Image (cartoon, rainbow, N blue to C red):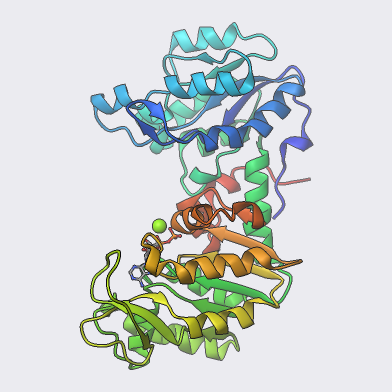
Length: 396
Ligand code: ADP
Ligand code: MG
């Protein structure tokens, strides 16, 4: 389904409610990484260049107590955004109420007003219609550029979009194209690489991707639940006992659908998850008693490389090993490097830790797309229609 984007509407002299993702990491009320604010600039600047007046809204963290409210206000964000835009960003003391309404009424063309943390209001997560109505009353039209919350039906992304026509901002448009359209219409061969800690958190993704891909490569700790389903010995590796049956089903499903489901053949193993421990390479059929499989081994990487080299589309979610520790990062690093070198292929990374790994290796600019939404990108890869995307107008 194609969605309407900000290119499809004339924003001149319009007040625009923009749901952005300013959910930045903070330490002592200071922003430690302003990537998300920077990422929103193309949409904000486009709207301003096209004659709009902006009311920006975002959540920040997950405030629960009064103390959180003190820590998670939007003051630092407003200041950083002012610097990045090179113009004063007004900050509202709340999201609703007379004072905010007056500020909105006094906005002039080209002004930018940032509302307070939307999650300071109970109505946000409940998608309360009255809260949404107040937010919508500020504007003629709304824009959603917050992919990271697209899997949640909250007031600021869904409620408002029921009351105002909603257009996708540039970030949202890119995610829809890169994840949604790629899964619907991939260039082949289409290979997915899945890894990470738990098979249980990726079942939906595996099931959906199995219907779309030509080949599925599995790495990370989730392999060992499959290994047990195959009757192998997994030592002390992470196995989800209650998912062995399901892993067995997935193997059968893949076979029936004629998909290649490829597991590693060897692992870097150790008896503890620590820097500088002694490691041993074990075959998938038999991890030694007392050892944990912590990264995919060299033979596995050769097999994975041979598959990947011809791919035209690669979707990757979940590290191949405990990449946070150097001696177990080789598999993840090698996969990232193979992807980085592919020519004429669309390479897409989803998932918080996978994105962090690619950034850690300094390869982010070599990938076609690194999704900004952790939970949202996973649910999108499961083939679930995300409420935040559904709420955006369909393209004409
Ligand atoms: P993403 O956030 O990209 O979706 P996950 O959260 O599913 O990825 O998984 C990431 C975690 O999986 C990492 O913290 C990594 O250390 C862990 N992991 C990967 N392989 C193994 C393994 N063999 N044993 C234990 N943990 C692993
Ligand atoms: Mg994760």
